[in-house]
Length: 367
Length: 222
Image (cartoon, rainbow over all chains, first blue to last red; front, side):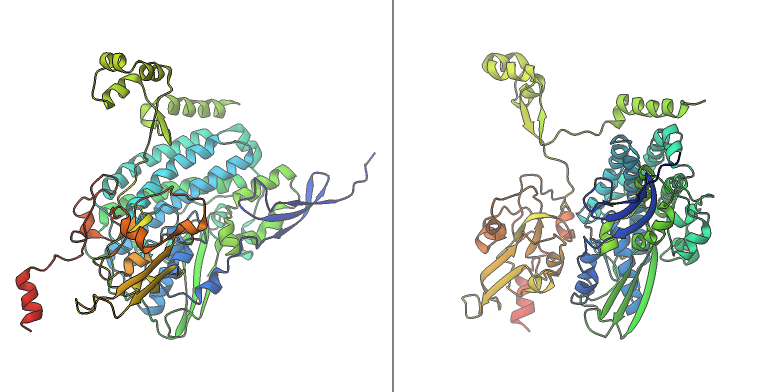
């Protein structure tokens, strides 16, 4: 005998331990099965784009730290690249290499956070997260050596970097890069072949390649669906065209593939950094760019491959010391477009895992 | 075989439990200290320390003696309590202009006693509202005379918001332990803000101090 059930709507969030911040999901359940999802966000809105209109170009660097607060270096890089393109500012070669090193270190740190919190939401309470954070701390120590801060870095400036790396940075980086593959092996030994993880993540929350492309999904989520699209390869910026690395892709697009792609990307990042250490030339770290940059009238869009996906800045200049308009293409925000397609049909417990595997950071979604 | 993955995971846990190279945990803010270490810190051996301070020795044996721990931090750490040298500051207010949040307030008096003495303003108010400061360091980058430096402190909480406004008297009285962030001339001297030594205003400039002859050449004979 079939039991007649009524759909019930539940608000998950905005204060919920398994949403990555202040994010609300209005979920309609039929029994335990998700039939409809409506994301509600804006709880962390700080008006970054509007604030940018009354800051000078260098002062906006401090605002970009607070977009994706697990990957400040990538945000800085995306922003200063836009300003350089707008103003036609040259960057010395040493600064470009150091920027690539910073961006790849930040990618490792961001993926550690992402994997750790995904497993935390899966029910592996604490242990994998602590392993991930232990390694991330060592990367943050390196950032402290470079620029004196650990999260809100403000390290990059239009035309280069704020200052050169100290002497003790290079041996510390070498030691960390030697031991990093071993750390990633540790994490994989804990997680990759674990039967509970496999049962909970395999074939869960599948994004088909067509859906991913149509939904403008970028980053590891897109590559897990089997689409080979990486801005570092497709449109090489900085010195990525001189470096040798592979772009890992998944073949199914489920939650497990997204995890595996992130782990493989961390290994590739280690490869990139080791090549950069060998190739980095000497010389200046900052070209002669004034503090009050005055780009000519015009507009520009430039994007980089941030840990979460394509992070782009669209800047419109009216010739003054601050931009007329600053539009941010935030990857975590646009990756949420496929959220409903991913979640409908899965159970409540899977909803948390699938949402965790999208790796959203609410500072970037709400801006 | 089913269950092999969990055995592998337990192997990783065991490896991290045993190997000394994987021990990263630091006890903070206090660390328990053994009797041997306590005697070593007091520059005596264990027996004489136990005879002189029997109460402390018993406490240390039972594990009740703690010493504060300072976490290692790089000399470039951007921290609280800005280091400011009034001898170097001309009151140009570049820091106030470059601050993204506008939290630095400077009031200068142009008719002051320093007017003939190299065109320097008399600084009446120099308030930094550190409660809104985000330690981006743009003010330090902006300072053309290397008068303002980042500090190196942290955990300096107060009970009232008013106490977070650093005024000129507090800036003058603060210990001169500048951070080496954006100050390569201090970094090249291997200065460590964690140690006890301080830097006077003559040592923190980006350029060498001109000698008497150079000053005469530059100013008197022009």
